[in-house]
Image (cartoon, rainbow, N blue to C red; front, side, top):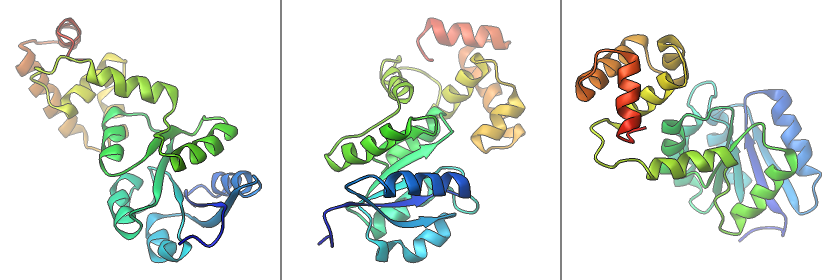
Length: 210
C-alpha cells in the first residue's frame, strides 16, 4: 500500500546535471514526489525496493549494467512499478528490447519537460507513452513484409546503412564490434542475393523488408 497520494518517482541517470534537472522538475510539480535518484543501475538495485516508486525514469546508456539489461531485474523487485525509458537512443532493436524487457514507455531526451511529467501520469493511468517518432517506428515495423529472410538485427543494420551511417558508427551505436557488423552485412548480401550496399537497400525497400 502506498504511503501517500503523490505519484512516487525514482530516476536512474548517470549525468548529474540531467538527473538533478529531472528531480527538480518532477519534485516541484504538484502531485509528484521524487523518492530516489541514482547514477547507475547497480546503485539503484541496492535501495530502490525501499523507495517503493510508482514510476522509474530509466536511462539506457549507463556505467555498468545498461538500462535495458537492468529492466528485468527492476521488474522482479518491483513488479507493479512502471518503467519509462528516457534516452537519446532511438535504434529500433533497442526500443523493442526495452519494451520486451518490461518498459511501459519510451521517450527521447528532447521530449519537452511538461510532456515527461504528463507521460508519468499517463503510464499510471495504464497508457504506454512514446515519443511521436518512436511510435511511428514501432508502427512501421508491423507494416513490413513478414516473410523477410532477414533477422531483426540484420534489418536494423540495413536500416542504419540506408540512413547513411558508416559500419563503424553502426557498431558503436549498437554496442557490437565492427567484425560483427561486417558479418551481418555479409549475411544480408547473401540472403538478398546482392553484391553492393545500393543493391541491398533497393532490394529490401522493393520487398518491404525495411
